[in-house]
Length: 277
Image (tube, rainbow, N blue to C red; front, side, top):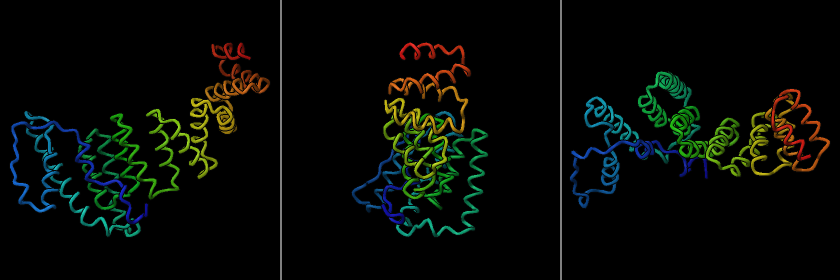
């Protein structure tokens, strides 16, 4: 997928589909779609997705209408200019403007003004749809709602542009792990470690996931890598010991268990693993 013409990239108008608003049964829309142009039909189809959060709360209804109108307008403008967009054309002035938007978004999230934060993110992405900071902030809102699948989609699209950014690989790997997609997460973390050999968090996650998948050789390799930096980590020593036992490397397993016993002498798993030996 080319950087300039990527069709899989995140689109701002996706926000309209993702806002789960309840439908107002008292509103009805009657339009003659046969007489409309394709562009008008498309706009009308978008307008049908407008829903209201609370029939009895007039302020909430007004806010919902405003967000939807602004979102639809941004989406239409973004669609018409999409073919001419290019991440390299973002000027320093625009980058500074987006930076201010990101600061405001963080402030609103800290104040739990989530709807306003989401609207500001949309505003910023209308200027630069590939902006890493704004996309990650949007993904974080989905993660707050435990909607890791939507966050996963955002991180996957970001990797198409920021293909050597360790932070995005780390976030994607975590999102996949939370969903139980361990095989894919394992490959993502391996790629991350290829990008940054000293990325100790990637080694930690690889050790855990490899142990979960029964890849005991890999678990031992990455557990040792992590323990070189954090030799007193009891959880990693436990993974190392268990994986060595599965590989029947008894002497190394006993050494790891002795280290673990010094850190966590009342750990019941130590006795269990020694009995396996």
